[in-house]
Amino acid sequence: MEMMLQTTELCKSFKKQKAVNEVSLNIAKGKVYGLLGPNGAGKSTTLKMLAGILKPTAGEIYFNGKPWSRKVLSDIGALIETPPIYENLSAKENLKVRSLLLGTDEKRIDEALQIVSLANTGKKKAGKFSLGMKQRLGIAMAILGDPKLLILDEPGNGLDPIGIEELRGLIRSFPAQGITVILSSHILSEVQLTADYVGIISDGILGYEGPLEQGQDLEELFLNVVKKNRRAGEAYA
Image (cartoon, rainbow, N blue to C red; front, side, top):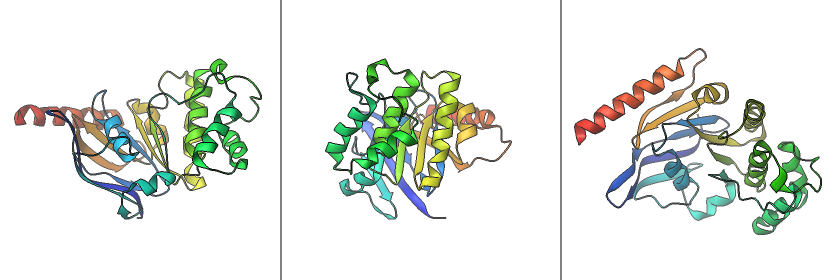
């Protein structure tokens, strides 16, 4: 199986605290990979390293079989934390600003809006969008450069059930468009319906990685991994 992204013993320390501890990920091409973990587990820190926002303390990242460099950022789209939206601009105007930064063709703006179902929002200002619409606009900004890899950090946070269902369908549509997705979440039921593979991280340690089997009890697996990591951390301390 071809890999879009791999990490080898990836580490990130802040002062004396190791937030990510020797994490080795294997993200297959054309799949949705769910990175799971409790709050503070190291998920966001890991994704920020993959997106070039943070520099690893140690370890390696490989993108499409080659060592990660700043050059690959044009092939990576990311929505980490709050979408970078100008609330006084429409969806299209927001993407125009982004397009100028990326140097993308303006016709890609309409394509991105169509993909995230925001093509009919007209001149409505983004500040008046629902939370779900803002998340979709953030994703449109992330896919504007036609990336090979899309990184989404807790994209379902704060969404109502309808917004979550729409988001799920959108994420599931990306592999058919040639986009591999890394999805971080602590909502297990949602990942169960969205991801092809899962990695479970707790206390900075990747305790499990593998395909998500149909009928698998993800909650039981998650709790077992988190408890095991916690016991290992206490024994190490």
